[in-house]
Amino acid sequence: MDKTLKTDNLFNGYIAPRVVKGVEVEAGTYLRGTAIGEVAGTFKQIGESTYEATTLYGIVANDVTLASKGKVEVYLSGEFNKEALNVKSGANVNDLVIPGRKIGIFIS
Image (tube, rainbow, N blue to C red):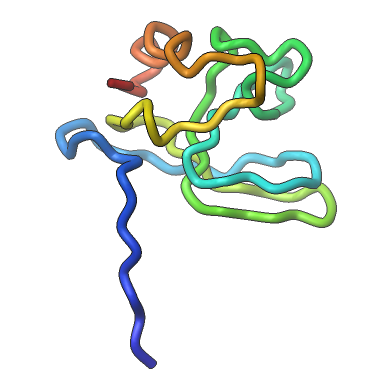
């Protein structure tokens, strides 16, 4: 079986290490590059209710659709292209730059 490598532009460099961790989220579709926030141990997409840029926790590693609550893998660190990041409507990717730097997520 041949595998086709599909490239994208999520990564903006290869100097900062990429650390991956699974986090539990509600049912839904999470696209690669979606910014995830954490509030009191609960993880949601940046732009949902109180999940502002300052709650940034990680970046979704792979496209995932969950029919019920489950885990998605997120990058806890790395260098990312802001043009490839996703946030909910009303949120701004540019607002993630400074909170991201504080936790090892570099966005440019």
